[in-house]
Length: 233
Image 1: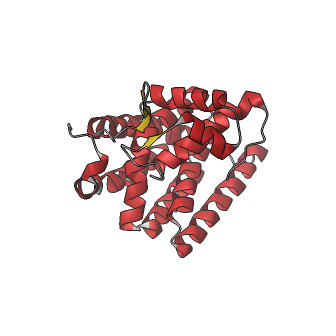
Image 2: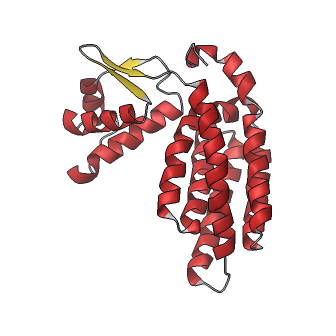
């Protein structure tokens, strides 16, 4: 069992991340029920931080709290996925453009960013070779988060991350179904090159193609995994 030993002030957030990852990678499937006390026992902690984490996930519409019964993982909303894709494309394009505009090889921090991106891409390549979808998905998120960090707008980054959450379960299924890991790696490599060239327009266009290609598979995934989605569109 996982045992969390972090300080109390960060414990609820650690539980939040733990549960969020289980939801996104479908370890907890849409419609599945679980209980506060079970999670607390599994993690070796009190129920309070578990309750706090569940409240956050419920506010983000990943969980449904059913009084006297337990916690249900919410079904994926097709409408929310479609809305999130549209908003993500617009906002994340701004972040990538800002990252391209700020890129300066003479800046020591940019040198660190360059090393970080190299490490992320190496980890993605390694995961792709092993066909390790969970690790590959993780570093896909890390890649996009790193660009949000480079862009320097913390508010923009926070909004994009929140919006992206409602695409992530279907995004994980896309990785699992298509196994187009080499294509994703090539997309990321090309996005990095455009950022390093300070090509603001080019990187926005390339990002849109990257996201549109992923979204082109979503219809088939919604049909194949119909039981994971809300009955209403």
